[in-house]
Amino acid sequence: MGLESFNRMQDLPPSERPLERLLRQGAGALSSAELLAVILRAGHPGTNALELARLILIQAGAENDISHLSDFSISELLAITGIGPVKAAQIAALIELAHRFQESAGTPDPQLSTPEAVVSRFGSRLRVLDHERLSAVLLDNQNRLIKNCTISEGSVASVTIQARDVFRHAVKANAVGIILMHNHPSGDPTPSQDDINTTRQLIAAGKLIGIEVYDHIIVGRFGSKSLRRESHLWKAP
Image (cartoon, rainbow, N blue to C red; front, side, top):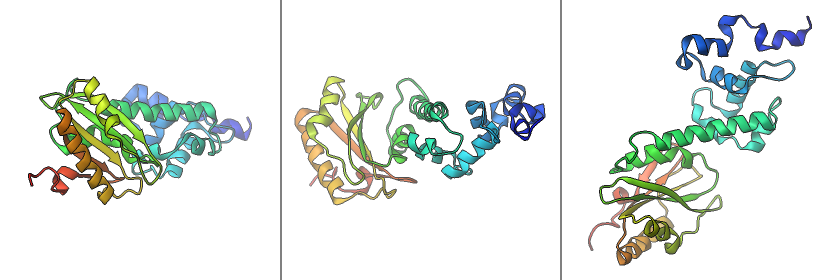
């Protein structure tokens, strides 16, 4: 038996194999590396799936915060020894499913009455992007979610916001109000003067067509800011 064969998952004792442990004890008993190893199924010559999973988490800085795994692009995954197109696609699909699960969790038509509720629902995807994205959360007259729409994508430093693009989705969906969200790739959610000026213009545009802008939430890597709370834009002059 050569050295390589000792690095196969089959050569681990059954009590240490992630798949067998999951089937016997449930997914909650496994570490993040073990769960990722179940997804990967196999490693590469000299490294089994569990060792490869640990390497991926280390390189992603995700040993203590699994959310860092979503920072990886496909090209960055492919640069890791032992990760080919199939494994990169498996990991990307896993990350996307996690985002979609979080966004669809809860009741079918949840009320989104606070910035915290909106960020909990939609913030995870925004906070890991390396470029700015503007989205609009469309709400009915009871603050229940209709849909979340991506309005525009920008460069690392900016995103272009046109009122017609923002409200076109809201009009089509018969939304009563919207909550704007965008991210700051720098990680700092502090609103810029451009953020404030643009929000002021969109509030005014919304009043003209009868769709209220309830808030504009800026998401950073480890926090968020509500312009409704942080500014005087919604207070009567």
